[in-house]
Image (cartoon, rainbow, N blue to C red):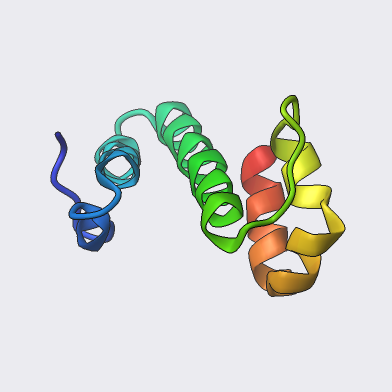
Length: 90
């Protein structure tokens, strides 16, 4: 468990997301590449959670780019958020 300044509000229901956000914060200055890796994992897990809670259809082998490019997801997600998720993916 890593306590987070910005992601602690997620701990009660989504402790894994809170931990990933906390690690990303912790590594931001000492290990920027590690921080980006944690943020990408955070983004992937968050998108999968959105699919689960929203009931969006996803295939059993869909990867992160497939999930981001799904029309149902794209229509429900603000463009600025899609752009940031795409940047984390790359």
